[in-house]
Length: 131
Image (cartoon, rainbow, N blue to C red; front, side, top):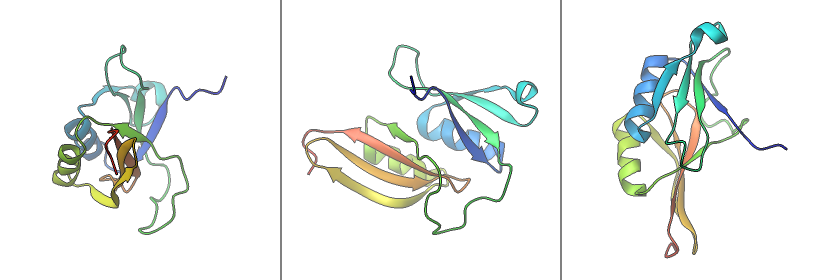
């Protein structure tokens, strides 16, 4: 069994990151800092009845990635109902476009963004009419 059951997003500014992911994706957070021995907030990403996993925001332990550096980590992709509305929220909350919206023909719309902490993530809207 090798199924992913948890993710961690490394952040420089915990309050800024919680605001970003809370405003853009509606995540809520639980303070697990006492267990982790550092600033560490569990991220509840949706209802237990929905497909997906929960994770955490954790205090970054080393330098953040440099701009234009190739990705050297896992990239999480969030499923969204409305790509364009989500992109607007990302930009309004301090995120930046990394790879603009593109079609996965007959499947979905996909794109990648940079959060307020310099991390790359994707958004994905299923759409059989994407082309």
